[in-house]
Every structure is written in structure tokens, then in C-alpha cells.
Length: 390
Length: 81
Image (cartoon, rainbow over all chains, first blue to last red; front, side, top):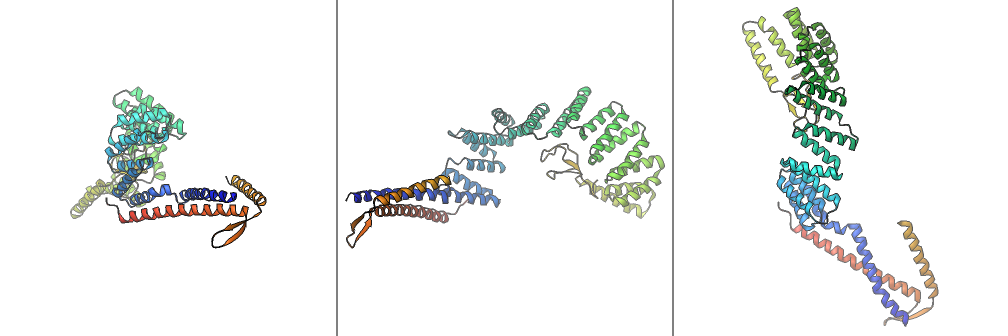
């Protein structure tokens, strides 16, 4: 009978083992621990994808209440608050997350990074700077923190610190930041020029060229400095180099270049350069410059003939306006009235037009900015080419 | 992980064969309605399998019932912003 006792003892032991194994399999297969959250999670995600952020926030808040350990949910929620402009709520949430005991170091640094972004959004740049600096010192999410720090220093126009951190970022990530650093040096050079520190400005420009040898802005600033110093022939060389470095900036470079040609009495060189440009640049600016040149040298008839021939090749509203202005004096009576209406119309057409556009974010502007006011990228705003603009 | 599981499985099968061979003698069982004779090793294995299956079934029924209840509760209380 002894084996019967053994059997009686074995059945409950096997029962417990079977129950435990089934629970384990169940947890692993259906994700029972996760499934309590997952239905709400996917509901929240669905609201997010449907651009119903209010409902998404409600769901995520409920989720965070259910399970206070869901750090990722808190982070997502904070991000949502920030994007909706509710920065104070985002700050409170991330502060709560950072102060939570038992949080892993990795999660805490993510929360700190998010908190820094909240501070930036709220305009509390000093607090954001302190947080990002700590993160860089801890070597936690350092590239992101460095990028934010550079953005802060750009906003504060602290170009020296921006340069220092951009160089650190370059070393850390291996990505080339030289064009951006060159722009920072150009900002410093421009500031020095405005304060009359011309030698200092030249030194900054030299450093800009060291970073980016074909920096258009540095060439333009060099030309301006030389022109202001009365060295017009040298200014011409600098402006020509600027156009050769990036021909897209021709509309901005041509006016000072033409001025320097005139001051240094190099009009033949001007004609040669502009003629050469006609072949490789399809905007109207060189045409208008040549028209002006021919008007002064050969008279109105030659200028109008040249402009008419060029407008057939590259139709442009700016060119049309120049043609109307040129022919206005010869017309009388009713035709003159019609031409006046046409001139007003073309002027209004040009007034409403954005002349520049950011190649990254599409921001349109009437004036040129070296840094896009919208996406904050450097050298991405370029003249628009088309019938109504360049 | 898979080779280790195979090794353990082989060890247990071997142990089962050895135990079955060592306990091959027949034993009488009186289950009130009928009587039967089974080898001692087979009775041991049968008890283990029955206990395991009952335990697994209980756990499965428990989990699936809870999940169904949760789903019903979720559907009854739609979210209001």
C-alpha cells in the first residue's frame, strides 16, 4: 500500500507544477502583465494618430495612474503637454519623474533631458543651460544636450560659447559642424565691424575661412570691409569669389559688387563677369545689371534691345517692370495710362512676393536671413527662382 | 537554451524508462466501480500527468475569465475627455 501514499502525494505536487507552468506560459504568450495596460496604450496611440491629443492625454493620464512605474508613459505624456504648449504641466510631470526614488540612471537622464527641453520652451534658458551642462558633464545623452546648449547660446548670441560647444559636438559625434562654426565666426565678425573693431573682424573672418574655405558670407563680409576701407579693387575680387562660391546668392551680392566695380573703374571687367554669369545663372539679376551698364555706356536704345532679347529667353516680372520703366518716357496718351496701370500691377505683384525660401522648412521671407527664423538652420534661406521673383 | 532543454528532456525520459523497468510489477487498484491492474511505474506517471493537466487547466480558466471580465468593463465605460 505504500506506493498509494506516494501517488496521493504526487497528484497535488503535479497539480501545483502544472498550474505554475500554465501561468508562466500565459504570461509569456499573451503578455498578461502588459495586456492590462496595452488596451489603454493602443487606445491612446490611436487618438494620437488621429490628431486627437486631448483624448490621448486623458488616456495616458489614466494609464499613468494605474501603474505609477510606467516611466515611458510619463515621458510620452510630458512630451504631449509640451507640444500642446502646456509647458507648466510638462515641467511638473518631468520634475516629479526626476524626483521619483528608485528610477534607473538611464531613465533619470532621459527625464532630465526632457525637463531641459521644457525649460527651453518656457524661455527659462538659464535653468535649461544648467541642466544640459550637467548632462554633458555626466556624459549622458551628451550629443543631444550639446545641440540644445548650442541652440541656447545662439539664442543668447553668445557666439564664443556656441563655437566651443559646436567643436565639442564635432569631436563627440564625428559629424561636420564646420559650416555652422563658420557662421558663428561671421556673426562675431559682423559684430566687430559694427563696433569699429576692423582688425578683430578680419581675424574672425580668417577663422571662418579656416572652418569653411568657400563660406559665401565670409567672402561677402570681406568685400564689405574692403569696400568700407576704400579698397574697391580688392572688394571686387572678394565679391566675385562669393558668387563663385555659391551662385544662388547673386541677387544679394550683385548690388555691392556693381558699386565696387564702379568705384574701382573696372566696368569692362564688370561686363565680362556679368556676361559670363548669363551663361551659368538663370535669374534676372545679371540681366538687369547689364541693362543698367549698357544704358550708361551705350544709351537707352541698346539697353532696351538687350533687355527685350533677354526677357524672351528668361521671362520675369522684375525684368518686365524694368522694361516698362525704360519705355515709359517714349509713350504718350492712352497707351501711357495703360502702361502706368501695368507698372502699378507688376509692382504690387512683386510687393506681395516672398523673395527667399528656406530649403529645409519652406519658410518664406522678403529679406534674407543667414539663420532661418523658423527651423534655425544656417545658410538654408535662398533666393526663389521663378517668373515672379528672381 | 534549446540544447539544454533537450538534454534535460532526455535525462527525464531515461529516468522514466529506468523507473518503469524497476517498477514493472503489477499492482491491484480497487476504484469501487471497477478493479484494475496497472504496472507501478505507469500508475506513477498517470498520477503525475493527471495532476499536471488539472493544474494547467485551472490556471488557464482563471486567467481567461479575468481577461474577459476586464474587456467587458472596458467596453462598458467609454472614455470621455
